[in-house]
Length: 209
Ligand code: DC
Image 1 (tube, rainbow, N blue to C red):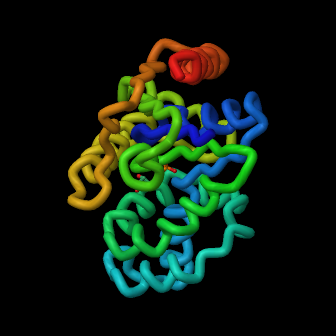
Image 2: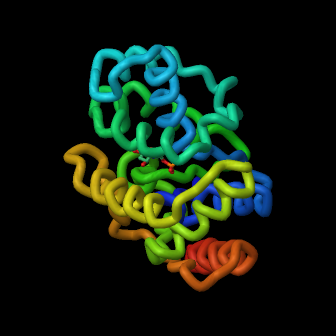
């Protein structure tokens, strides 16, 4: 079984994906990390994030061994990822890696922006996670503070809003729910309740088959 989880930044889909994968004994891929790794590689070489050739080269050289690097989690790298991910050729280079991951047994949970629409349009279950931008900014602020980083909630909110806009309005693989996606609004749900709600969606879809 393939479970696709999409949604905007800081909607909690990463943690949700991980927990769902644990619940079902599946593998989990946070696809945002891939775009973050590409952006980080460009930044590391002192390159311009808007230079398409640099981003493509970084995507071709992607090394899953680097996905655990804590530096990828920062808010700045997230914004940088939103910029490089808008290049169609970068997405193209990363497509096979994601499909390959999804296809291997015993099953997989992938979370991102375009899993249900582009990467795995035939996913068995598609969940689109949303939450109020203010709640997402609060979550990001607490996360950053727990990592010992300074965080300005108002600035984070402004970034979240502009990133959503860029992710939604890009011509290739924009952030949007697939027609057959189930929307999960977790503005008022903690992580445990979100996981329960997601499991309920998966079980409801399974039961109908
Ligand atoms: O989910 P995240 O914050 O780690 O994602 C960082 C950026 O990467 C996001 O703003 C847009 C891009 N991204 C994407 O274009 N497609 C995906 N499947 C996942 C992330």
